[in-house]
Image 1 (cartoon, rainbow, N blue to C red):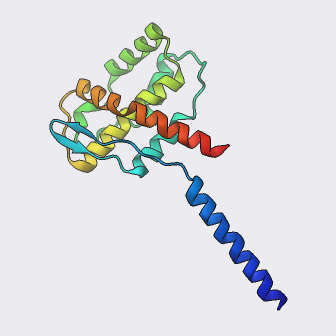
Image 2 (spheres, helix red, strand yellow; image 1 turned 90 degrees about the vertical axis):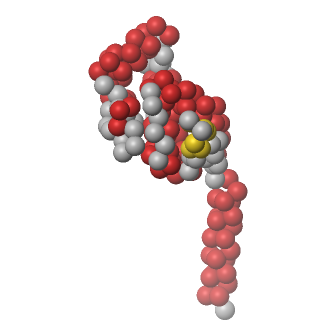
Image 3 (cartoon, rainbow, N blue to C red; image 1 turned 180 degrees about the vertical axis):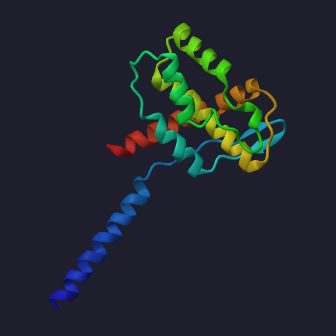
Length: 161
């Protein structure tokens, strides 16, 4: 009889834990965007993967060129993608972002958000088979999802407390 009661308690405890997790788990939701008339959908796995990397930032750190390069590497922006290999970051892009950091006083957190958005767009575009013509188009597409990314980040931060 004692074993049955213990098992029931353990099963009840696990069930309560599962329900709590389902209710309190962060929602990684980013709205779909349209590029050249084609819809790019953002699966929660792509959003979760890159939004969580946004938090790993020192918001006060002044970034040097090597820091910008390291972040571009971390977000795989220097790697070619299957559908949009022409959008990989080169030395000119690293120099551009370094200058942006100096000019607009962007910190690591800002750059992580920018780079995460671009990476998400590239991965989702690859999955959808959507070719993005220019880096300016990539920038515009990334801008379309920034607010959603911040909301997802806030959801994640709120659920950690």
